[in-house]
Image 1 (cartoon, rainbow, N blue to C red):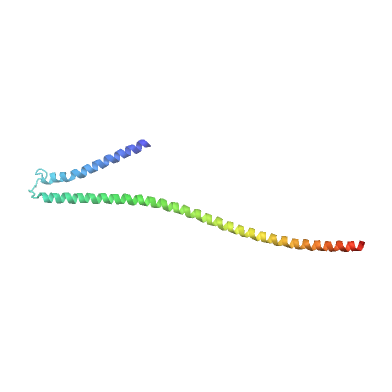
Image 2 (image 1 turned 135 degrees about the horizontal axis):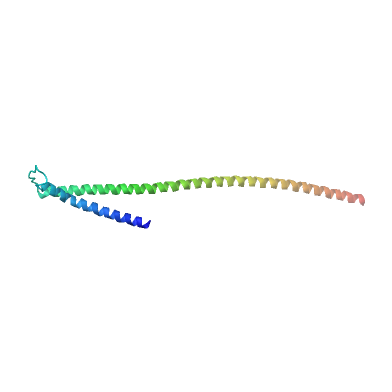
Length: 152
């Protein structure tokens, strides 16, 4: 796997060197074709000064720069889109987890409410039981006192 990556990097570097070499030599090859009498059988003497040649080189380099900057912008856009898609996917996962947590929190709050209601019911029943128990104790005390009055 590492060998393939290394070979790919070498091939990419070699491609860059070849492209740069061709881009630099292309204007000179065009100049040689234009000014060479044997290239065209219908050759007419081209009278152009150095300023025309420098103008051509300037426009050629400008075109190359435009193409390179366009390629760079395309590469950056693809890279940003991948990062943005990855972030969107993570955001969706986080939203789902937050939704699950909110649902669990709602369920726990409902369970807590039920527990509070049950505690309230138990307290009420306990209070009722204590009142009944206190009433029975009072009745038992009265009965015991009346029984003791009978025996005395």
